[in-house]
Image (cartoon, rainbow, N blue to C red; front, side):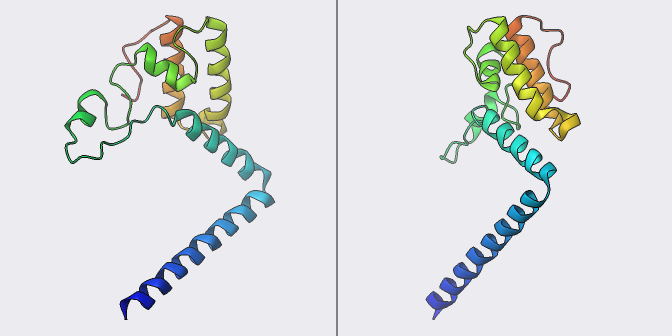
Length: 141
C-alpha cells in the first residue's frame, strides 16, 4: 500500500522539479540580463568549488572545524589557498596572477551582481600571491 503512494510522490516531485527548471529556462531565455547573471553565478561556483572542503563522512566533525572557519576558508589565507581560489599554480608569475584575478573579478564583482565576500577573497588571494599583503585578513573574516 505504501509503495504506490511513495512512487506517486516521487513522480510528482520529479514533475515539480522539471516544471521549475522549465520556468527558469524561459526566464533566462526571455531576458539577456538573467543569462549574464546565471553565467556569472555558474562561473563563480565553478571557480570556487575547489576551495570549499568536503564535510567528513564520519560523525567526528572536529577535524573539519579545526583548521577552517564555517565558510570553508582558512582563517589566514596562505599561498596554497590563494592559488586554489584563482585557479592557478602557487609558483605562477605576477602576470598570470593578474590575468586570473581580472578574469574572476569580471565574473564576481559586486557591481555586476557578484558576492562582496567572494570578491574580497579573490582580491585577498591576488594580494597573497603577489606579495602585496596589506591587511591581516579579509574584511569579512
